[in-house]
Length: 295
Image (cartoon, rainbow, N blue to C red; front, side, top):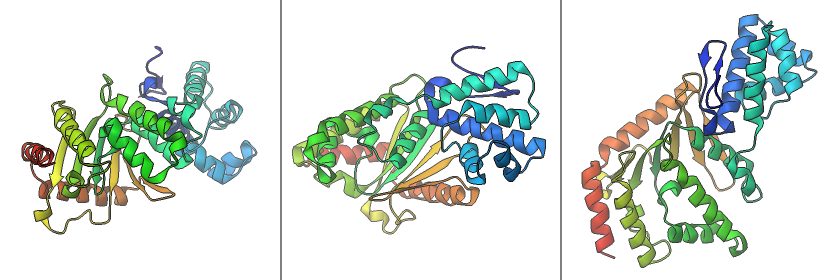
């Protein structure tokens, strides 16, 4: 057993360095599988740990931290008696309960966005459609500062920009995710922060496309109506088969996470359709260069 990865009950788990959010999801998934294998209902599990069925649901979805006592009791109920299995599982629980690096910014973040940061850090691939702005993972410092100024007080703007820069480190991490971004053409012409800031931002987009892990497509005005007319969204995929893909959409004061198969299939179709409607990566790169030169 190494500090970097775990094998639990014959199932290879994730690299623990990728953050606690995915670890919580994986722990929850295993708890649900063990409960089903033991023929235990959520109501029976809840009674055993003196909790509610809602608590069992949150635990199995990885939406909350774990109390070791609850996990020990559940493993006992599910007839997991091998000391080695229990010790490995509890060690993973401890790592899942550890705060992520973004915890130091929790005073700035709504809880629903903290969860997204954890999922983003743990992802294998990120596909995103952006209708209004350059995605946060690709924003320059000046562009990010201008975006932050649109909705927040200047008092904490420096830390918010710092947070965005910290997020971007995952793109240079050796085991970081691939990023495939489709941008509406309007993003290339909306002068967020002014012409000079936008020009520098567009030049940055050209540079990042030299990284094989980053692909950018532009959805041109000429495409007319498109399948993503409902707005921006992000799809996250994970390396672990036990973790489902997740679609994330954000509103002004809340967000939505979707992992049901019917929702995932709908969003995959939408993303595939807008990708086909968009310019190729090479032509998109040329459009970005042209837009920068026109400023």
